[in-house]
Image (cartoon, rainbow, N blue to C red; front, side):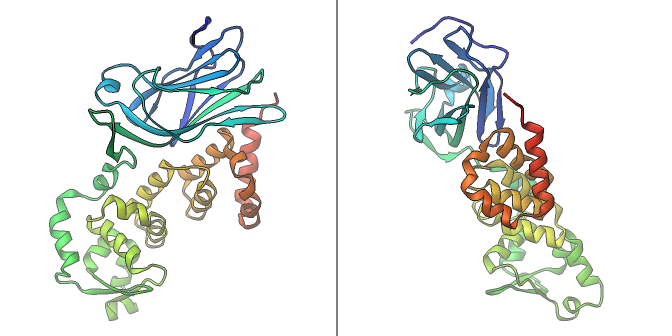
Length: 335
């Protein structure tokens, strides 16, 4: 397939958020081939191209160069082409798993076509670095596995790990919903002003050396202690990050709260965006809230959650609903 015309144009910019890339094309014009500007997702720069003949052909490929050659991406993704309408119409690809080295490795044929403005979405479900024989590697480049380790100081891992796991000189008992844990007043006080206040003043926690955490299980509280003591692993963090966020907000542990917000912002999708928006509002997470609102309205994914939105509005705070309405007004432009 080949065609004449310009490779790119004034609307060749691709916007990205989380794992979603979106290319809006106001008009195809007289040319039959368009290529986007490069956009960054994962460790690679990417291009989208679209070619028009009897059908529309969409290609996704990494920027040619040393990185794509030595560390080619093995991607799991899906694409959607949407026409503004009215009526609004879209065509969605199946989930694709593909080794991508060049523009010849992947092409998707879209049979439907309409004149005027249209949008191409690419949602990356996973990205891995392919091995030398062309198969996917065992570990995803997501989540960012270095993030938690940077927050939890490596210099204290050895001694703090032993203190926690072996209860060395542990002097406080934590009662959870389904079990008991041992910890250290000094460590808890150092990380949390709330815990520090408990042990400074004549409160029951100081007298009994006991803390009741009735809204966490042993497993989720162990994850909280693991973060505080610097021993948490990535899988444990991901499993309990919403519980960690609630505890961090309750006990004033800023580092945990910031890390959870960044992590929840990293993998927004249609299946979780409304829940994430509620969490962002509940714990006053401005970056996560803006990310969710942008995903829904700037990137047009509100259409993907229309079956769930009524239930969300029944329980949403009125001020949050007002912000959502204001977001609609700010991005709405008459065709």
